[in-house]
Length: 208
Image 1 (cartoon, rainbow, N blue to C red):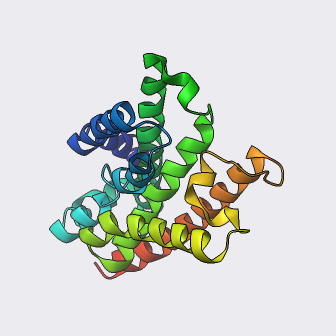
Image 2: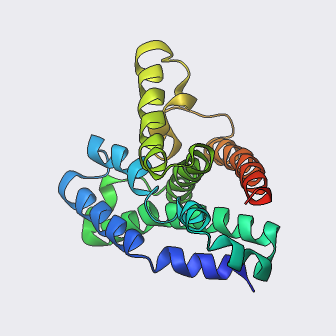
């Protein structure tokens, strides 16, 4: 069984993804790309589609029936990848639709950065859900981390613009290697989270 394809379909066809996309589109339409509301919505809405999928299956006991059909590695990687891709696709799709409404001049065409930013916050929520064994931590944890990074940048470390999450998808400073530097940083952070996520789930599955 291809766990990745199954998880991807479940993530994109879920009510949570569709609801999150509609809310994101509404925020862009009413507030715009540069608004504080849009900035806050990214870590919040990207955590909704699939960050707690594993936790639901683990707590319900469904994992014991499903895991033997696909194998441990395929199962964990499928969950992580589907969570990240659906999380990145949510703000990206909303921004693409927004630009098609004639608002293209209101936002930079940094679509890869928008996707990777959404992916980062989605997998952050997934890791928090796995570590804390809590849906509430998943849905609120990404926002708390986002807010902490904003506070650290705005109040204490103005020169460390790499800490500012908005810079990750709408950079105003000159990065080393330009946008490629942001891509490499986000990709590295996502990879690290993938390793942490795999370790946590592998340990939980062992004792399930």
